[in-house]
Image 1 (cartoon, rainbow, N blue to C red):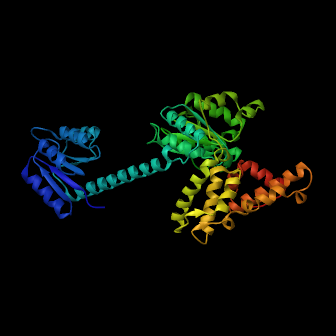
Image 2: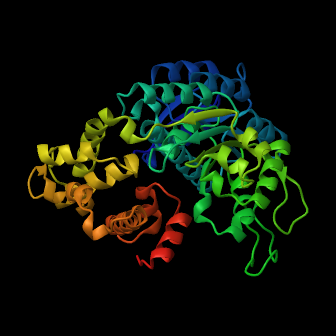
Image 3: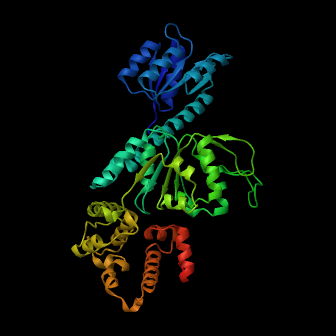
Length: 454
């Protein structure tokens, strides 16, 4: 990156000339001004990245110049030059928004250090701004691809809910994009500059749930060799996304409810209360109402979480979105793989349109990615699709090898779907569970039941 343009402001010509001459030798672009008014005038006509100004000048003081600079452009860094021993001046300047200060008489070596430190800071701020812009672009509501009326209503509701601090419950089958909607809500909310922390309850062992959420103190349990900040602390001033909320054990639901009510908690093994300001967005693919009736989910916690409910329709209920999403994934994975795959064959598209997509958008994404990787031409053909899709028609008509009774056929179909999902996800159980529309814990149970291996 090019060196910044520095504006040197000092009413003493000798000091001004010394500083500007030194900075020019260091390859900086340098502008000069004899006072505050002249400096502000120069900044309105030319691009300035940093201002190096004396604190005490006749007419407009350095502090008044600082305020004027921030009005023109808050991102311009201002470094104050103060008289030796005037620490109170430096403190006042820093409180008013100065990025740094140096004392007279000037030590040019120290000046180099201060400038480099502030240049690095300016670059970091620019990178953070670009990153946030990229995140907003990636997760902005307008980037969600749909032509479905129900999905448009979902996005409208999510957009209106984003401005509040109320808890949200996002409902939908696995793979429908619940986390994408949650990120879009966060990045459209007043908390967008704060952290977005996601935790999938189904992927956390039951005995570590409370440590995951609330953290723990050193020695709190076997293996706790150091203090750990939990997800709530990590998400302070931001958003905590809790996926698979229905898998939280009842014993841990009590503590979660207390945090939502009091906005404070204790780490596991600790006694100090920790205050947090966190917005909760929870998600589930289960019926929490049924779990309440069975005593597996607390009703009071449900009402705390379900202030605003957002229900995402499954992909099979909005099949008009399949061609749009398929085209988007085609272009995305073609760029990623460095290939020019531009379309699906008519037969491949027909098979995809007839599929029920138990894994929803995530499953479609995986299918298209596989197709792009395996495609020999600029078109994804039926042969490039996963085996379970290619044999779908025969599976629907086959009965003999599956047995004649309903339980036998259900068992055979479950085994085949689990095996296909494990194959499509290269043995990754978390991804396979997503494709099947069940929790990872449920998948492990079925694999044990049918004696299946990854």
